[in-house]
Image (cartoon, rainbow, N blue to C red; front, side, top):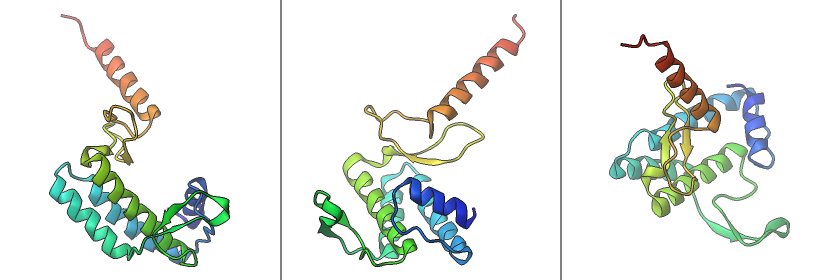
Length: 153
């Protein structure tokens, strides 16, 4: 990960004031590793423990705001906080909401053998197995090619 790649990711997800320095990269990487624990188990107690650890680390203090003409919505840290604090708060808070309202089965890891990305399953039926349609399609093509290359009895 580089400061540029992190900045692009934050901008893609509309994180305002996404100024990242090279010194911040290690902090974001450590946070990414901590987030991964919430996706590593299907056991509810383990997921709760992982998310609770994130919530403590993120020092969340929620409040409702209507800045920039938006509808009322939650913020978890002051808007003046540095970008790492804001990312920690929104990711920890978001995972807590998903875990509490949708259950731990919505926190997944891509089933494609060459991919281990984590995702939140936002599908209607909650049956998502891949991080993206591209990974799912790649896996389907690999299975198809594998079946075709086997000798027929």
